[in-house]
Length: 515
Image (cartoon, rainbow, N blue to C red; front, side, top):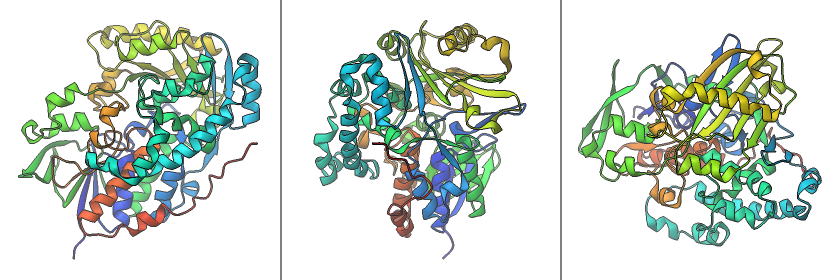
């Protein structure tokens, strides 16, 4: 029998991981990518010898991708060498105080004792509790959810008492820490999902736990290098990449998707994997009358994550700062309210700066540094006109960098690139510019998220942040495993190599143990 044909739409991390696994299974795989390079939001921006990650800069929990690599015959640590960072990042608070966050629990307690002595020891209790929570939550993250009945699985019922779904992440952290700065220190990771910790469900306390337990890693060449290497390996496995080919229309027979059209060609397949931004791709590509649950009208009513205002700066010299730096505004709750509820620009925003050349000199010319600046902002809103406000927000952002010691930044800029929510929407094809996709509230998780085996079109499967389990690189990679299993099962092909991969011990990412 000839190989079963699969077309993957989008060469982001979920699409690349799916392509590798499908090729391993023996499928004839073609990847259609609308841009001229692979990676999507994990691509690289290269300007005059400076290299920047476009999107994610934190590489967390390499176990998932490591298992995928090993299941298809490669070792992640060999293909993309990585370094564990210590400190993981520096947290500075507009209201005063600083933490150089490290997996060394004794060192964390020494730092906490300086400004919140009553909270010494609370971090260890938090870590112990979340170690159990992750173990209980893993089966939920690793399984598809196609109906409310899936909530009655023994694994879900057994995890329920550890997850406290009706409690917010902020409220959960207040059970451990009295000082509000420490609540934020272990809850700000909700921003990886594009949400406020006071709106995000408490089960996501595992995010900061993953950092301290399994490390924050820097891949040599940046997170973009992971996606680039995945594409190279996929090509070695026989995957065909078609860059600069955006899908323009679909062919259907009843509910069955039979072919995709681009400006260049027509692609028939036995199955299709969509890794494009879910709401954007569906609303632009699939006829609205084909979709009931996920019609254009219903998509517009959904809740979406925040967006980000980005500056990529190539500078003269270097700063004596850690690799990752997060500054929390003085009135953090107001900042969050301005982003999520009022949907206006803040005059005192929180921000993040990556200073990667302290770890990786390959990212800038000699004597220079690459800096990545991210400011969480509202997604597309009638209250913000980026055509008129982008320049002023740049000046505000550069002024705010003085809070972490970068008061001379303007004099040192040699290269500059900017991405606004308008750019995320128009250039990167992200619905409303919501860079973290559909929000992760209880009404939009598990079976309430678009299903990995898409429920409204036969032969269509989803990967990426718009489906289960959600946003963030580790769970996007996990979505590829879930989706690939479903697809191969439906085609009557073996998934044994995937199942064996989940049982393998991944080498090269052993983490130090601190008492």
